[in-house]
Image (cartoon, rainbow, N blue to C red; front, side):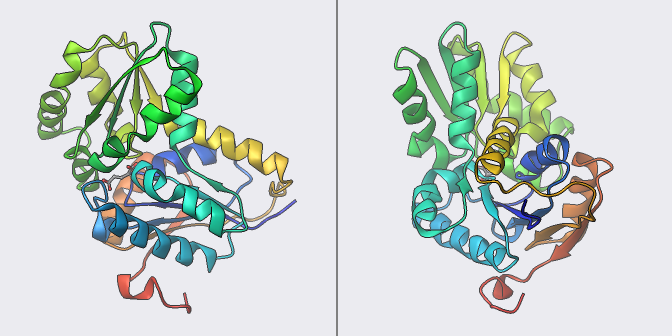
Length: 273
Ligand code: DGL
């Protein structure tokens, strides 16, 4: 048994899609989350910068005494997971392998498309991860750089969001797919719009759901699960506006009980918080 919290990081609110699954699948666990909305989106930033920012967020979470780290961001997973795994003495989980496994399991036609940020698509991480397990699957990757900013600004159901999603996903029309991986943790917040554009015949994979199943397995394997029936205080931190973050979190995490705090970028590296 280990009652320390699990740490989650993302460039902004996207990782809340993973946290929602934690509340569902692992209700005894306590969550510490940091979303770097002040510097989002990460997806169009150079790789080295994403690595630096990610390490800053990890250092913040480590100071909160976490027992496991979940990189709830595909862009950061693509560039920083391997390094972090080698550097930390707690289990580290990314979102790309779980999403890939789910897609392999789900595709009947062996036709899988992936949407993600420019960074994730350029890294070809999904193509590699899927290809290593099944190289008969045809893969089409598409970058959707406008989606994360839409979500960060709280545009989840508006007509602007619908228009941008429809425009951006046009290239998918020429690819016959039965499975589409939402390869950015922000995208499940746009799921109804995306589903509407690609049609009901395409199964959308939300890597958050799969990732939390992996977290659950690792908690058992390392004997790190938290005890039942104790007080938990989930804490969500944002580097930007608490108000907007809280609005999106309240909406997305429904009735969960959590605190939202602001953290200054300048404090991210200090040892006091
Ligand atoms: N949520 C992130 C991801 O899964 C990044 C979005 C962004 O900041 O560009 O890739």
